[in-house]
Length: 229
Image 1 (cartoon, rainbow, N blue to C red):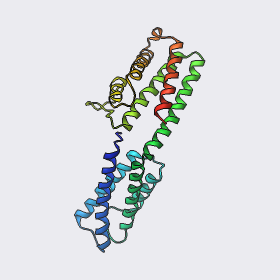
Image 2 (tube, rainbow, N blue to C red):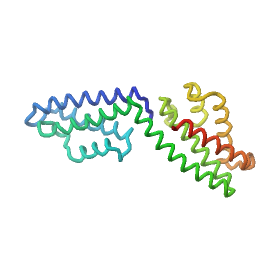
Image 3 (cartoon, rainbow, N blue to C red):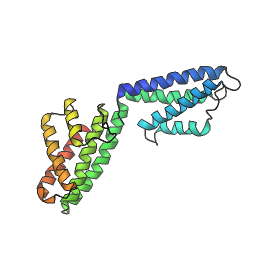
Image 4 (cartoon, helix red, strand yellow):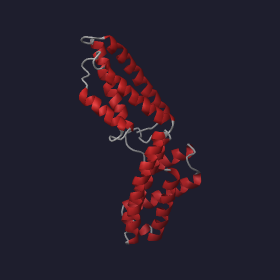
């Protein structure tokens, strides 16, 4: 998911505008809706649901409100009896715009992600203390890659290549430096740790030692703490 704030706000506003058109029509309609209005209602409901589920957790108030709307509202007609539910969902969209404009959505996602990564790094640290340097290196490297992916999303940087596959560490690393998310010194360090992770993942266990994995863990812990806060 590419969390470009301006694009998401514009998308939400467009959906609200369509919703307002449906509300205006629904207020005046006391019978069956015209086919074009039924089509618009169905389009609005589908696109709004996709939008909310794309950027909000399923347990969020916004997602649960839309799920209630989906279960209790037929989009085969828009009339005086059900336009009020469109008003409610437009309010949900307004709340998402507020979160985006005040960077609340990004802060929440960063906090949640930091907690998840912290759990994985604790697991890697435990494995390292037990002498499992190779498994630890793979986990730490995965956390580093996922952190770069989240930073790309938060800064509007594409994470999918032209073939539809996720970018690897190197291209994301270069893009984040170009976007001034961090400097070239950090870039070089990330390149070095990515190389260690690749050696671990491909079974080249003799190309690094436990001390290097310990240093890698310390770097990734500090990196996540700095950039996911």
